[in-house]
Length: 369
Image 1 (tube, rainbow, N blue to C red):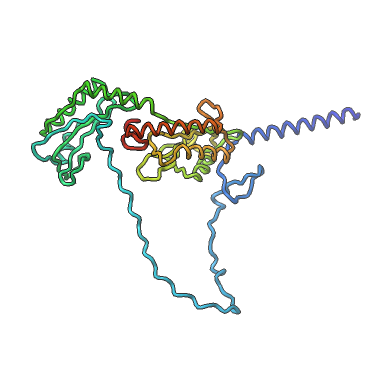
Image 2 (cartoon, helix red, strand yellow):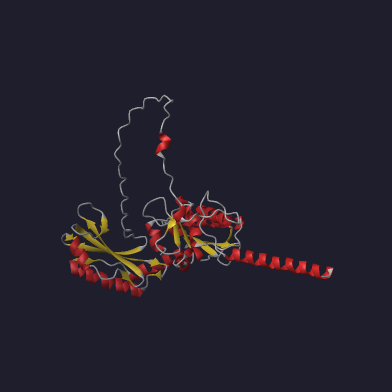
């Protein structure tokens, strides 16, 4: 072979090797990142991988390590303390359903000639608890506690009231819905022997429109999208990193939540991704290119500092998973943009407080739903 042929052969071999290496790199990048374990041996790419379950063993204390050599003189062991009986923490009490509130409800008092039992009230309630698109409710004044509550069996009530919500995200209460409320309340009152006193329809419908206008201008739902820069993520990989920030699995596939500090309150943040990937036969082979962090501003109390935690969670996940924080359109969100959002939210919180509809309150959660 001539020197030219040898040179061409070498060049061809180098090109072939480069193509093979490039294809291997592309293939590796297309494989979703899977669950990692701290302290595990690194794989070929230098990242630790989770050892197979069959090979993992919990540490076992070897009794032989507790043996004391004969040549060593041991000290007398102190008396063992009295065993402490374990005590169970009391379960959190279920929070009562939000009571009717004149701030956001039309309320019709129902006068009674004599006390009525909770069983009779429950039996007379209509089959559906909605009037059009608005929630409908009946409450009783408990003869023993003197508090308004939803009817319960084996209780007695000396007064009743029926109510329908003035507005929600479906819009304000209209004339047709008010008329349906009157019909439904009258039928219930006839069944329990009560006399209803309905407010003026025109005034209540006008109040509903004004409340809806306020709610429309102060409703806020924030969402940050976290997009993978290079390699995709598996659901387990996302779950592992999110759980380190306090997220727990939600009730639906592809959903994790950051619980509130108080039991029974809505979650502070919600993390979602493709539910089909979570329900796949082998979720670890599902490739996720993006996840979403969302905040229902009006449903979470201001004291929880939800936006600050949303921002910190997004940045922490982006750093840990090699992602980029963007808006819904895919535009990156710099620190200046997040600062501006935080300033606007403070103004929103102030406006809600002035209207006695503080974020996270039962009234705010009902109005903004």
